[in-house]
Amino acid sequence: MAAGKEIRGKIKSVENTKKITKAMEMVAASKMRKAQDRMRAARPYAEKVRQITGNLSRANPEYTHAFMKVNDAKTAGFVVVTTDKGLCGGMNTNVLRALTTQLKDLQAKGIGAEAVAIGNKGLGFLNRINAKVVSSATGLGDTPHLDKLIGPVKSLLDAYTEGRINAVYLCYTRFINTMKQEAVTEQLLPLNAGTLQDGAGGRDWDY
Image 1: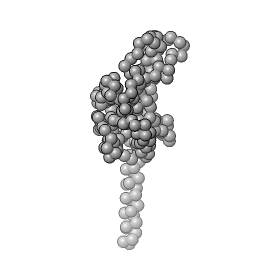
Image 2: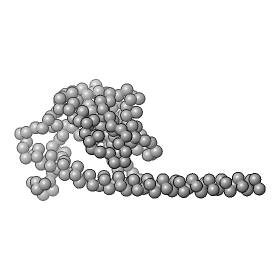
Image 3: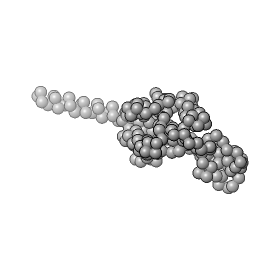
Image 4: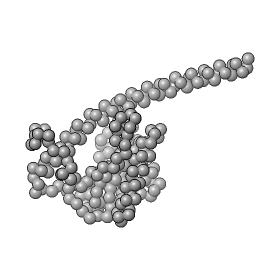
């Protein structure tokens, strides 16, 4: 009898755990859908900004914006985007591994680095490797606000326009689908007019 009661207790415990994990799965799926919707809504805006920038640079090739000027500073800047918490597979690990590779390549060329950390995981990693962290933004939650990101990122933009760093890179995870994401290190500055998107129909500038 005691053994049967113990077994029934274990079965009930497993059933309760199943209910909890099912609820957690539903919450996670809802958050995922909302995040995907925000991502899809932001992509056309980002692409249009790149297109406008490319059109403007080609319309007036004599003018060189500060973000297009190349300098010979011996330091590069990185915006490192990770999560605040774990339990997200290899998402953070892959980004930080790509960052480490980039830092080693620059170090071999005699170029140092300073970083802005977006997310606790990236901040903790940068501190562990004794990287120079000039600013950070953590605790952003599921719906990060732009005003919390502008200040930290602007510190690198200002450093670039002042000639203290020679480039700004963005390290993040590019979402492809729920089964596939890839770590990306993308150069933000200096801007290269040749790589910016042009209007599909030529000078279609009615924005």
